[in-house]
Image 1: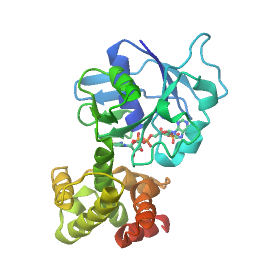
Image 2: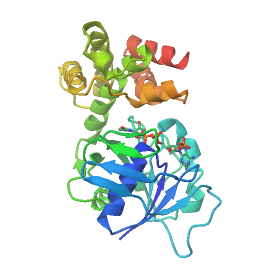
Image 3: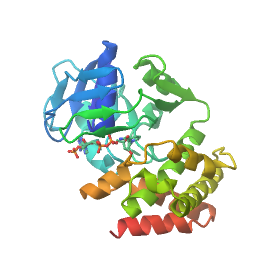
Length: 289
Ligand SMILES: NC(=O)c1ccc[n+]([C@@H]2O[C@H](COP(=O)([O-])OP(=O)(O)OC[C@H]3O[C@@H](n4cnc5c(N)ncnc54)[C@H](OP(=O)(O)O)[C@@H]3O)[C@@H](O)[C@H]2O)c1
């Protein structure tokens, strides 16, 4: 049994809340900017109605006696600072914080937290908000974490098999970043994933991913020589009408995770003296929209 607060209950936050609720072992608080009106998640094993206390303001009190064992941050990367506004309400010295976000800079986004209490999490299962406000979870819960004491405790919050621990988490995170960096081609062309199944855009996507992998190796990740082709194979296996979150954000006029997905490759490339012209171009065009 754990007391768990979730900051950010969009597509992924909803799937996480539903999965934790299904264990029947936890007390959940859902922290959102607007009241949740359709707290339902369509999972592969049925629809789950979330039934948890919903706070919409970091100045609201938590129930008396309730202290968070865990705070899960599940906002977009660009909302990290706004998410941290909830910390004074939720954090005690014992609280552990899991960051469920894309990219490879989970800890860097929250430098003020005690870093041994922070668990970076890579989310592998796709989910999306439907027009009616419900969430569609495509595939079973699939999360990757480090192999630390805190990460093992995080894994124990979930049903068996939903969270995998890794001795080489760095490589897992960079592999995901290779996928995400290449996804810029979709957001730039305003086309769903199918665009990555066409020859010329696919070549560009592969080269963006290969640039990412070169920087990742310099950071210590182990990535195969054919990573570019593996990323294309990944995209080939996805339904051509799938929309990645970068494109979804662009279409909705929201900020984009372009810095976490492409900018980081440019910045870390500079640190290692590795040119990253394709990621720089993708970043520049996305940010200049
Ligand atoms: N969706 C996927 O398939 C998927 C897969 C793998 C990884 N990821 C990663 O997972 C992370 C979360 O993505 P997502 O798809 O769940 O994003 P999302 O659907 O946009 O949800 C993010 C939620 O955070 C909320 N939020 C923003 N600032 C907040 C604040 N200050 N307090 C409380 N809530 C706040 C947003 O609320 P508003 O509605 O008010 O803006 C939104 O509901 C991202 O890093 C994403 O790249 C997503």
